[in-house]
Image 1 (cartoon, one colour):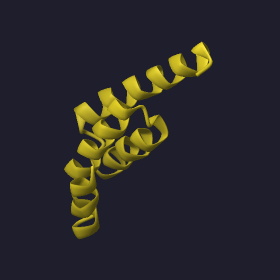
Image 2: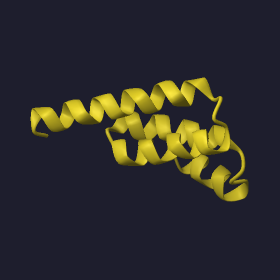
Image 3: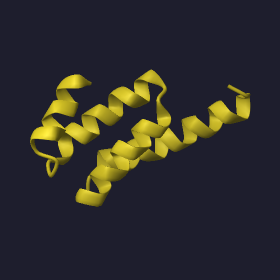
Image 4: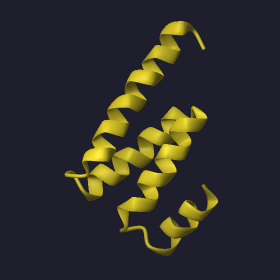
Amino acid sequence: MEDFSLAIQSDSSFETPFYNRGLIHYRLGFFDDAKRDFQQVLKMNPDFEDAKVSLKQTLLDQQHKIDRGY
């Protein structure tokens, strides 16, 4: 995750590091951070299909976690 954050600091207009960092956040269960990264990707590139799918899944999993009371 640190490498992707450094890449973002180096060039914040490149969406791939945001997407990859979002995937890591998602896998660790940090859904708010994942949402933020995926939304940033889509702000820069609205046609980034994998980011759309990942954001949708993040929102579903976050709601499922809330529904379970975690």
